[in-house]
Image (cartoon, rainbow, N blue to C red; front, side, top):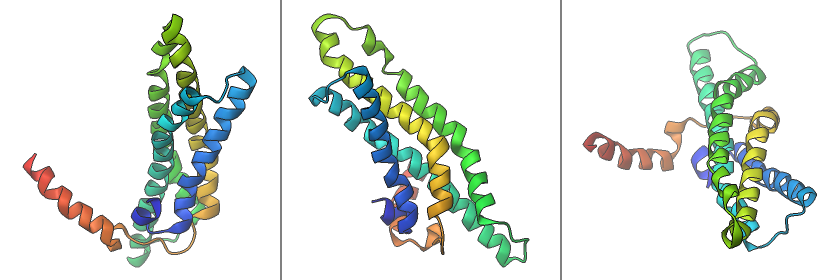
Length: 180
């Protein structure tokens, strides 16, 4: 699905690689804390999956926008900047916002740790693993994703307006937005 919207396979890999790395982070912390991989703890990781990949997608999409703007500048005779510089600028622009949004989602699960008795035993593994996965995604989005972008986001980046799927979604979305 990342590839369909981004239109660039290597850029999709940046967002996709965030998932196994985030899961690995969770499993390492679970192992050291002695939390079993039961249905509730794995459910916490599954709940975090969508939000984890969103961080990578937002960062890569912002990088695409910066590269697209840079291509427009070059077409107008503007100064050529290094791709690495553009990607770092894009990561710095959205990095803090992504980190704090993931941190806020992580903090929202903290009340579950106050549960006691049967409810506590049932839901604490879920809360622990979701917290670990989200914390891992927050750290990875600031450290690993920019490095992966520099390594993988290469070649011709298609303009958003050139993607037929994006055009179709926007044609359906705009009338609803105007109606609202």
